[in-house]
Image 1: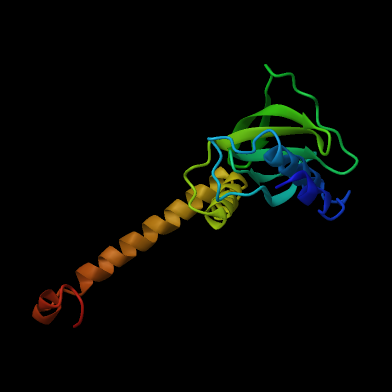
Image 2: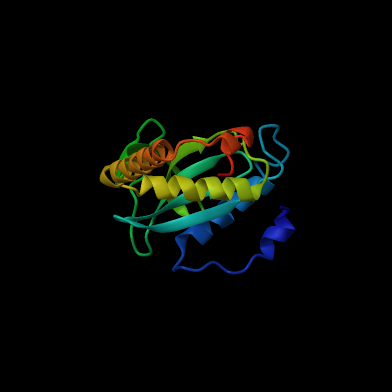
Length: 181
């Protein structure tokens, strides 16, 4: 995106700090990262599924060069500035993750945890966004929820196996590859 195109973007909302993050990274994409060989040309800057968590807004930022889990200060809130050699651990229902710090004029201080860098795994923007949403679902899923989901899946497999044993395969079913009665 060119500097002229950046100037035509709609005004940012103070109620959505992720909009300021997108503006910062659109500028970076148009300047510092323009034409870099580690950028995936099919990806664009997009903030995905940000939500409130503790004292922050947390979501995934997709860029042509990386996909990161990001924590931003909530409106009126503050995140601590992290020196380059320091990390902050954020505890989520699925576990604890280390974040590094960053700062840009548009969005101020933010913290990030790298998920994909570079981001060549993605065929298109939709694949990157779908992956980001799935990551966030897992991030906010507790260990108890994960155990329950696995137990239900095991129960369903066992029930399907029992149903298969209860109904022996007929000759017709065998000849049709297990299909038909």
